[in-house]
Length: 172
Image (cartoon, rainbow, N blue to C red):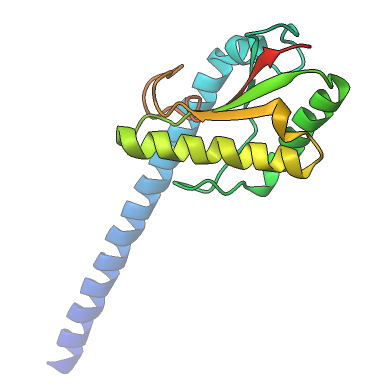
């Protein structure tokens, strides 16, 4: 009788483990599908991103470049390490064009409420400006503004919306 009860308990544990593994595989499949969709969206928007490449925009008032390799901690304004090379490109660009004044604009993915999106995007833009200042760019050449989810460039939730833009305010 004990042997039968033990087998029944072991079978129940195995069934539970199997169901948990199936859920994990399904979750991984969803994540892979989601990444594939993001990759597809990014590739279809490659022309848009190239249009806004920092070094391909005309140096004129109103020109906007997307710095698309700037990443933050989720729901925070802390820069992730892979962001530094992109910001260093902005520093080099500003040092090369030492008369330019720019605005750093922060944008969110559009999934949070308005107040949070506005505050988060503003804090992220300020973090970028603080980084540029720490690298020797004069504070009077820099402004920042958080746009929240006002100017989505893709469907709400798309990572393309969560971006930092550099806008040229003056050239001389």
